[in-house]
Image 1 (cartoon, rainbow, N blue to C red):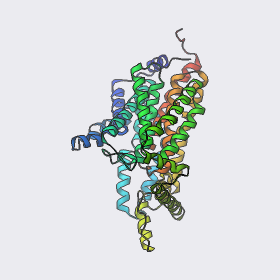
Image 2 (spheres, rainbow, N blue to C red):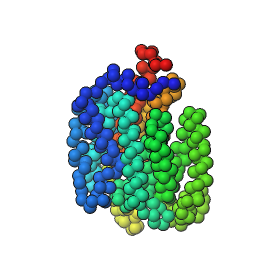
Image 3 (cartoon, helix red, strand yellow):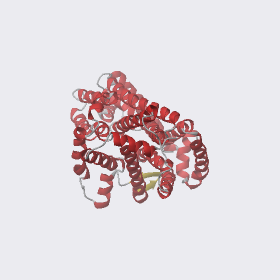
Image 4 (cartoon, helix red, strand yellow):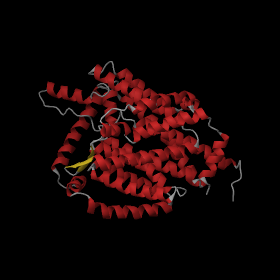
Length: 433
């Protein structure tokens, strides 16, 4: 097996980053930390004041698009191009929106706070050392969310929610967010070169994170967790699989003993057990999903307008003499297709597909060559991506930062990983014995 540290040192020596490149990287990774850790909302909950933390970071991170090392390759990347087309279609769908004013606000917010991530990340995170640092910082952001949940979490009706946040405060949103962030904690835990104290803290964080995810009573998160577990079991190396099996058995044994009865009852409804609130929620979601498909077919080109499904459904129902649901689709995919049109949906799917295909290939190649550092990072990112993409199938998170973040991270991890693998394959250097 090839040392990831040795590879990183050689690759970084061949692709040196100047001081301005590192400053751009630091601004970028700080921005990701603020978003991943939900820091602005947490600081408001603690201080009662809007500290405008993003204002101190965003300008420098966005400037990194132009001074970073990866701008040229970023602008040529298919995933970036298709994600930009996705946004262009959102803009084009705004003039025909059922409420133009509401759509303008959503499109503006997305363009200022989400879209740039797909440019910032690939332009500023280039070397493998920077990949490792970014994964570590995202693991730290997961720890911040866990700590904030410990102090600001509320358990009502058997469901944990986060009082300090409006973005991920909802039980389902909190669970989905943790599914993604904990994959970076897993990366820290699996890294044998990390300090044993860090690995121990990572293990405890994952255990507590699993408790919170299940404690939210989110059935969508449970489905995502199960699919993620299956993916991890079949794709992980054999030694890691054995450890995963042991951990899974312990979790299945212990978690039912510590979860509240109300939580277990709600999750049990996924397997046919009776639960009135869960059944009503399921009926509501089913109705909204059918309506989202109906609006997609009725407005296939530009949809009913970005962020306007709830308003459109409510007004249409009221015009028909009905009360209406007045809620989002609870499915990110049909949220896009019904609000922005089928072309926007296709652009988004192609952007994700063209980002993850190279990442998966990089993982497969790294395993064959025995470059464990690269394969470990790719596996953890693929796992977190698989779980969050499953979770958002049951959530209205199309305009959150997840898609841009995943595409950006997939691009940089695959790109830096392939550079490491090329060094091994070319035999351009001699590894120390």
